Length: 401
Image (cartoon, rainbow, N blue to C red; front, top):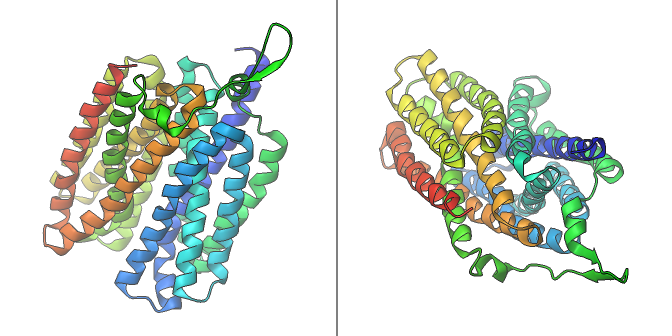
């Protein structure tokens, strides 16, 4: 890649990393602000659960629509509007004065963020050559756990003790990033190339744009089904860990502060794991990467079940974090590899939406298992079949690419 191409890639991945940091902060925001929101709005546990789910629910239509529009009118414009929508409605979270309005603004903020994620993956993938897509997506997506870890640290300060400050921060940061995107973020070269081609007589002809149905043509059908299953079950486990890890620690007899510390280690190792697995995706045989990352998740889950000291629990949390979040980054990279340019945004967007369904179901199932008396060990054990299924379907996928 020439110097111009390197500059294009560095700027694109860097800006996408910043937006992923903002996503990571938002993932943590609801949980960190939960106690303050509960008191401010006078919510019971059921209403608080609805509040958690609404933000995730908003990711679904966002992911479906964002990638599709980006394939039609361009990655950059749709990403800027998505981030703007997220910023506006995150700030509105601070200003609403009823529970129903709170749910509406969280849903709309989630829709903005959901639209952004498939475009981030697509832009990072298309900024580099095919041989470097794994590391590009890994470097971009490691921003998610970095953002979550940053907000965990902010929450431990006097500033973070006020729940409104959490959402002020979450809304103002993307507003600061938007001008940077407008001025510096380049449009995807692959998108521009696919959108039009120069004919021999110099006229520009528009290349036919992909559609949802192209995900199910003879070439893409099995890849689409395989990646959907893997996204669904992997994100189910990811969000069980993101939502319930501190509570699982409490179930196992540790303090809430120790649970929060475990989540910090989880996120810190997740950032490192995402980068390393992304690099290995480019350098190793894809099957080896799949076996390593799902084997790592299984090892971490078993270690969580077997650990009987605080140090062992912290190490197990770090192990799970490195592989479970890193695995999500690798799946996103595969989305960029599996689909051709004209349907890449659509394909990754729909797969992300399917994954978000798993993300919504995971914490709910975990809560039901805890309520039914299965305990933390039961929740962790229930995650193991999900990982096995995901691994099998990813191995089937790589046989076709």
